[in-house]
Picture (cartoon, rainbow, N blue to C red):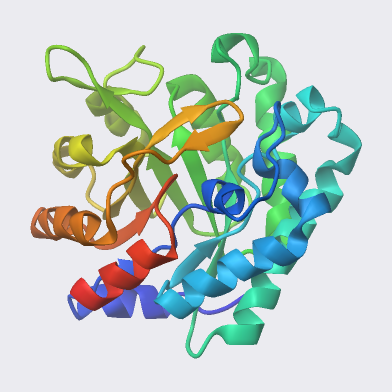
Length: 300
């Protein structure tokens, strides 16, 4: 583990902290086959060298934080893919590969984030979430594996449901590591910003999550054009560090569709607006690659 004071020091100097971009969609772009039930999970078995190369490219592009490939390594996702027995091994390997990338190419401090995703790859997520009476334990197990393997912080990514998101946050906090929250949003026909599952407004979710003890919150895996509206809602209810890592393109399981993905230049222009709105930390999600992060570094 490394000392994360450098992140707060950058923010105090009014410098933007850069997250990396997508891992799963970047692996796919590089020819790594995606699993029909657990997306990029299998890459830890079939292409760990490519996973490492992705992390290295983000570090060399200027990322201060890289997120390991554990987004789809939750127990409930691996079970649907017939890979449940690999749960501990794959989560530990995801952190190890990211650390190896940092050790190989980082010229300065780079934090390694473990990803925990209280989401699913089902058409009806409610049928595939962990049972509520087991979810906390399952998320705790993943959080502890990631922490013990050397994660510097944990990101709860793609929070789309308040109940599952709350349990994942509680689980991550038991490790004692800093916890960041990635809230995935959509805008409805009336212009209201909702969590991805659309059962709760973003404002309602922020009101609940703000008192739980996390260090930072983001609008993530959200259409780039909707991110500013989401950030405005987040800023109204969140006093800690905040930021954006939006996506571009479309997902048709198990493949990300890259048609009309935003250019690095246009993404950097959008990020300028987020910074003006008070974002401290900027990165990218699906469809956003090393070229986008490099452009953010040059622009911001």
